Amino acid sequence: MIRRLKALLSFSSLGVRLGSTIILALMPLGVLSVVQTRDALHQVDASTLKGVGGATLQAMREQIEVIKEAQVSARVLASLVARPTVGEPSCVQQVTSVKREIAQATVVAYVPKSGLVTCSSTGKVHDLSDNAEFRKMLELPQPSLIYDAHGQLSQQAVIGVRHPVLAADGTFIGFVVISLAYNALSAGAYGDSVAMWNPVYFASFTGDGRILVSSEPDLPPDTAIPGNHTFAELAGLSDTSFFVEEGTSRQILSVVTVAPNLFLVSVWRPDSASFLTNVAGPYLMPALTWIAALVAAAFASNRLVVRHVRALARSMTDYVSSRQRLQIPDMDGAPDEIQRLHAAYELMIRTIEQEEAELQNLVVDKDVLIREVSHRSGNSLQIIASIMRMYRREAADQKLRSVLDGLINRVIALSSTHTSLYTLSGQRDVSVDEILANVIKRLKEIHGVALGVASKRLQPVRIDAEAAVPLALALAEAIGCYFSRGGLGTDEVSVSLTESDGTIRLTVEGPEVAELRPHLTEGLVSLPQRMLKQFAAQLSGTVSIRLEDGRATVDLVFPRRNPLRQT
Image (cartoon, rainbow, N blue to C red; front, side):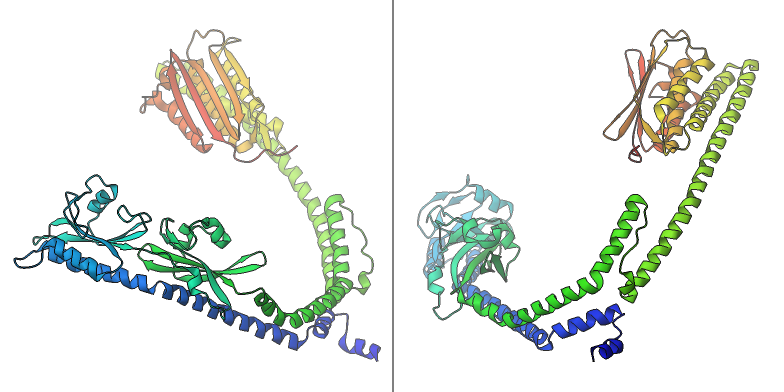
């Protein structure tokens, strides 16, 4: 019977093998139980968060209404103070009446722009002209709320409701201020022995993270608030409630907006640890079903798939590291898909080996061609330089001779660079210090410069061949200006090449010459400077020229284009 079943299902297919094992392990009832349990718990969590948010808002309902009432009273009082009429109560009587109407009001006052308060519910005179908060009020004359954890008069947390007073012509003349006592909520007052969640901490805070009042003044905020949330972060989560997981405990953080830039945060905890047990209980049966399914699937995948894939992976890794192709055992018993993968791998290896051989031949041909091109280019440039020197000797015009000198310098630099590349070809990067040394040597020969005139401090630096050409031309442009001047002494011209932190610097120093004066921008004499800037741009670098004590220094700095190739 088993043989018939194997023949019917064709176990040579990987999909049939894994699918059969998973179908036997995963019970539809378990999947359905998990889905239903998850949905039910999500609904419970959503309802809990809504209930906690509503309870937190309800706890602040009375204080919110008082603030709104004070805002309306401040607006009405500001209009009465701004336009006093004969027969109406005095300013002091009006503010005293407002204080009697609002039980939570500690002080009601009219504060003129001068800061000298003579109209207040306390009946006292206050000078606020030097008060920092009063100066801020003058800078922004508009209705707003002020929060102070320690009021100057009441020495308790207060909310200041202010409204600007405008004269009949619209001129700002002062403020009406109503100071409200702001009391902390008691977490125990909102506890419920029947409820599953109860509050343990209340705190009112401003948008910048300042605490006005809290139910536990002696408790540090970072201890009371779970999840390492700061009050400044909680201000951005206003009117939201969310769960916070800390280890095995689960708490709820609820943040509601009391007034503009004033928020209330509450921390809620479950009534007992049995809540977590009740939550985990419904998942027990689905979890056991899934565990059984995973065990069966793991056994099937390891026996039918993983061991063959691992053998194939080891063969690939060995080929990458040692270029040796090892036989994979038991591949005949592997599923059809893995056998096809193995066949494709063998075909790929053969293709790679063939293409590598062809590519190696192409690389060799390319190196030979590059060497030949560099060699012929160097020879051709030497011939051109020789012809130009012949024309220079025959030319009588000094300006023409100067132009030819500059051209000869550039051609010699190109010729020397190509000759060096011919000897260094076949490498991705070249020793630019050797190329620059050859350029200096050739230019000294052309200009007849004596030995010891040019000192060289060239660090061994390797760069790509494309960057070597503009760098050599830049050196020829700078050093040619110095060599064209006669009477050079020992070490009067110095050339240095350094590299540090991926930045390459070429510095050429010599006597001051007309071509390297920074203020020159036009004419033939400024051509070397323009050429230096062009070469620096090709290298994605910068060039600068400094004149100091009769010496001119050319400084070319550019970044390394590619990291050094490890050899």
